Length: 244
Image: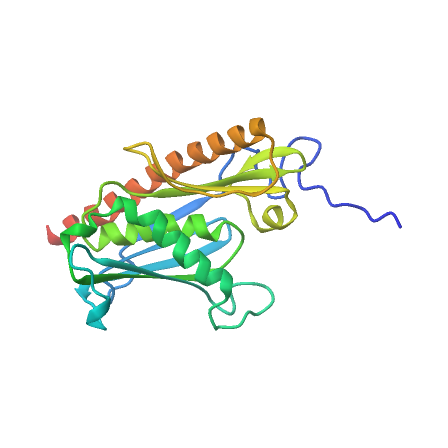
C-alpha cells in the first residue's frame, strides 16, 4: 500500500497556511475585555481564540493553604468542549492539569509574589478555539491579564514555540504541524531580563536543529512582546481619552 503522505511544506518552502518557516501567524491582542475580572486579556493567534482572567490578590480559602511569606499563584487552563473539532469532555483532562502547572510556573518568575503574603491570585484561561500552540498563547494572554490586574511584575512573559516539520525548522506551529511534525520546542521569555521561564521539548532534534528552533522561538517571543506592550498601551490610551 502506497499511501500518499501529505506534505506540510510545499516545493516553494511555504507552509499549509502560506507562511514562511520563520513567520508568525496573525496575532490580535486585547486587554481589559472582561469587566467582572480584576484583569483580563484576549488573544487570537491564527485560529486560536483564548481568554485569560485574573482575580486577586484576595484572601485564600482554606486558610491553612496560605503562605506566610508570599501569595499563592493558582492557574486553571481549560479547553471549552467546542474548542476542537471532536467535542471534548468538559471535565479537566490530564493534559489540562499539566498545562495549568506549566503555565503557572512560566509566569511565577515575573511576579513579586512576596508583596502579598497569605493571599491568592487566581488565573483562569479558557480556550474557546484551539489550533495548536495554545500553551504559548495562553502564557502570553495570562501575563497581560496579570498586568491589567495591577499585579507588580518584573516584566511581561511572552511565549512562542518552534519545531520541525518535513525536515524544516519552523516557528509558531499550527495544529496540523503540531500533530504531524517531528518536534516541538515551546519557550517563554522575559525579554527585558533575557530570562527564560519555560523551555520544553517534545520529539527528536539534533543539537544544531535544537539551537535553530530555540533561537527562532526566542525571536518569535520578542515579536510577541512588542505586540503585548502595544495592546497594554492601547487600553490605557483609550482610558485616558474617555477621562478627558
